[in-house]
View 1 (cartoon, rainbow, N blue to C red):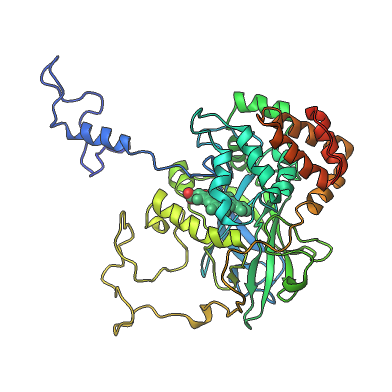
View 2: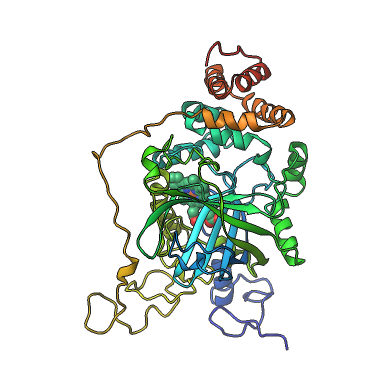
Amino acid sequence: MTKKLTTSWGAPVGDNQNSITAGQRGPVLIQDVHLLEKLAHFNRERVPERVVHAKGAGAYGTFTVTNDVSKYTKAKLFNGVGKETDMFIRFSTVAGELGSADTVRDPRGFAVKFYTEEGNYDIVGNNTPVFFIRDAIKFPDFIHTQKRDPRTHLKNPTAVWDFWSHSPESLHQVTILMSDRGIPATLRHMHGYGSHTFKWVNAEGQAVWVKYHFRTEQGVKNLDVDLAAKLAGENPDYHTEDLFNAIEKGDFPAWKLYVQIMPLEDADTYRFDPFDVTKVWSQKDYPLIEVGRMVLNKNPENYFAEVEQATFSPGTFVPGVEASPDKMLQGRLFAYGDAHRYRVGANHNQLPVNRPKAEVNNHQRDGFMAGDGNGGRSVYYEPNSFGGPNEVPEAKVTPFDVTGQAAQVAYDHDDHYTQAGDLYRLLSEEERTRLVANIVGAMKPVELEEIKLRQISHFYKADPEYGTRIAEGLGLAVPQQA
Ligand code: HEM
């Protein structure tokens, strides 16, 4: 039987086509409360889009442990072969707005939420193992250059390359971005990375440093730039559509999760700072260790409810996973929760997509949209004499040493060039040619020659051939020395 149409307060609606007017030609009456509510609700249909990563696609899936790693972490989701945990993922582009095209050159967000028995655990990474900057204090400036110019409301390549040329730590990520991997064929054909270094702690309280790698089982495939440009015009939702259709027809995409593990003490002697997110750890030094397999097998029922309102934070930890001193990660531990409180509201974790499957007991109460019973009559403060929820001492943070003076200290290892150069040297001749063409094309509109020259000198320092080819492509002088 067809359901009755009702107002949001559940009363039946008699007429949803004609407003109440004073006769045939009379004005609309303010007593038409159904009309008022309908228009007013419509005006409030949008929440602020994410300030970055606004355009995205999401899906549900299952994570299954294939290799027990309990000697490294007590996190239950990674323990016991065969252990299954429900999860939700959101892929995204970074710079574009909510309605922007999918097939642009941009890193892709790779945000995973595991609904574990000990609360939610989020890995909020990208499809690249490194990032453009390594201190959160630079993030708002960096993102300003990726967004629209305040005057023209256009993208501004001069700002982009000005910032990068003044921030040579970006060179590694710029090289990845401008390579074939800068435009994945689909969201299914790319790897994902936690990027940062995190700390894993086992049941004995022993800690290691860890990096996450999700490796696509579909294989890495990228889009040809001309096809990508054509698709951006003809089907701006190409990646969103591909993911939805693949899952809908049962062609479930899968990734294997691996980790690199570094003993705590190695961080003091490794040849670069292992908390610097512009660097990768050599897989020769720290080989990939398999952990599990993630399969995406269910599309959301409602985009706004489940994808737009999803909130991921790199600080959403469970026992067994902790922060590292990575300065970017430290800044992100603040930024995401703050974004969620602004964008979705203080009670965002009560929404079905964000709600933990573990029981939630705490003393938080009230706030906009307290939709879960608000703790009912249970005790709302601590300490108390009424058997309120108790602390779990095993969940305390693992003690760690801090030394030195508080100051604005730069990373003490400033080699921005070796890893970018290694990556360039790893590419085939065809890949180098496309990389150079992509960079030359992107740098041509830069207004100041000084910016181009500064950036060329960075490419040159990474590899003289790299710098030379870009200088030649731009018709500029090749730097004389590295
Ligand atoms: C989204 C800030 C670096 C990956 C966001 C959002 C903010 C933000 C405010 C929007 C959150 C929301 O509205 O729900 C920052 C800051 C950074 C930083 C301050 C540096 C200090 C990074 C890095 C990565 C990353 C290094 C990847 C390794 C993502 C992803 C999303 C996101 C995947 C989208 C999450 C989703 O799908 O909802 N970031 N970000 N961000 N960021 Fe970052």
